[in-house]
Image 1 (tube, one colour):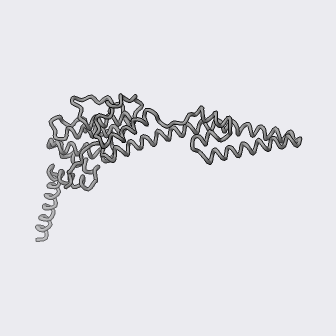
Image 2 (tube, helix red, strand yellow):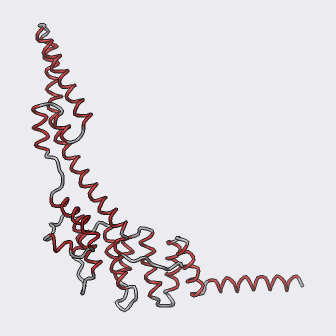
Image 3 (cartoon, helix red, strand yellow):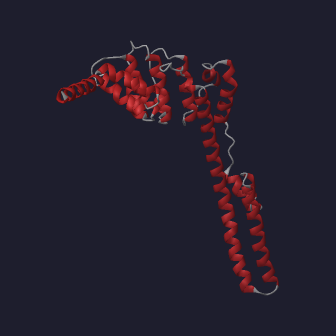
Length: 274
């Protein structure tokens, strides 16, 4: 009797195991994982499923899963291969451009050539131009794809790209040549500028005072130190302007990315997990 019971238990477990690995059950489990945001395991299960069945939704969710785990190189390959006949073809094109944005492959986005470019695709292409080193097109040609409620912000991005609020390294150096530290004040480094002004002034005073009191050797020592600080103050001011400009570029790009994220990259939300 015990042997019979063991056989029944083992057989039922074996049957359950086999059942679990059917394509249909793999898909159900993958759907559960996907909605639980366990995208990596979901993708692996979906990959097994499509070995048996061709399913547009699953193919799109695989690509989307790779995007969610930030494997954008793999996501790009999958999105670009979504069939034209698929219900997700339009979304896949947008997701492809979004993945390219994350890869900072702006040239590929700008050169994205497909028939009948859609409005949201034009928006993403325009935004990639803002993030790239490419020249901007004429203003009206740039903003026409955006709705009226977005145009003010887009025009601000456009104007910033044309005329960024940079500081001139040459001007910073000249300022600090005339008045030590003033070049750093020009680049909004207030404390560094004041420190440079006080330090250069102090060393110059010590050099002058020693020469005045016939301490020639100490006078020359302080003069040498002063010359070193003075040259460093000029060079540091020019470097400070370059750092300031880099920060302007970084903050600008971050603001563009925040704008894109706030508008979900102009992609509709998906309802896979109602």
